[in-house]
Length: 90
Image (cartoon, rainbow, N blue to C red; front, side, top):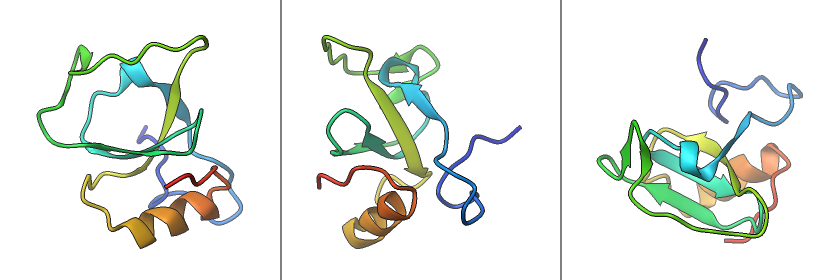
């Protein structure tokens, strides 16, 4: 089964699955669920063991993938996040 992204979610189908930040294992553009910031993960930054960075918070940190393309233009990223009813803080 393919992971839900903004490209393959039918209108009205809801928000794609959010995953823990430390479970990100593929390049792409993500929206941080805790503050609406944009996270760009270039190829090579994500490994099967997780991201090459670690951010620690008081609560689990979740992200939602909105594109497989880490270079998605900002306007398109904002439109996709808004269409998915995600907080846009970028």
